[in-house]
Image: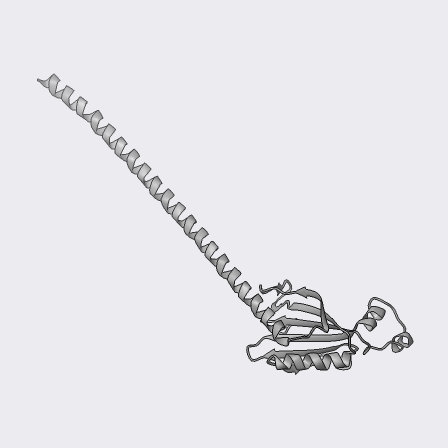
Amino acid sequence: MVKKQTATKKSVKPVYVKNSAYLAIVAGIVLLVAIFGIVIYAAVQNTDQKVQDQIVLEQTNADRKARIEAIYAKLKLNADYTLQKSDVFGDKRVYDWDNQRSYSSSKTYEHNAPVDKTVAETRKAIEAAGFSFIDEPYPGSTSTQFHFKSADKEYIRLTVSSKSYDEATQGKDLSLEERNKLDPNAAPSTVLIKVNLDDNNE
């Protein structure tokens, strides 16, 4: 009888150990699957958020660009103003060395009229589009620059200069006598119009 009881106890013990080991393995697998699922879910959520953020950013930039183009359209410059160069963008491009300043969109035109006449025409067009004059930073310069601001805090910088004068002087070491022979008011005029939605610090 004693031998049978001992045999019975020995046969039950391994079954208990095997069941415990099996349960531990199953629990470990379930835990790993749960952790893996959480990691995958978090990664998917993060990716979805990045995609959503990118969509919002692209739409914001598209809206800003459309707003800038609308400002240029409001100026209603006639066919006498020939577009030479255009750099219009919607994203806010901050200076690498100064995050308080940002680049402006710009359009450059040629206008077959003297500088003074061109300045008067373009200033009238800008003010008719809802912008008010705020500054002339370089009075008396050979080129004219005016700054304007709208009620919506949009900024325009107008620069007008003589194309022939610029071509004759830029990058050249002319004497004062040679410069005085040139007419800084001569036609045609180069018209640079910059638009900035954020600041007037460029």
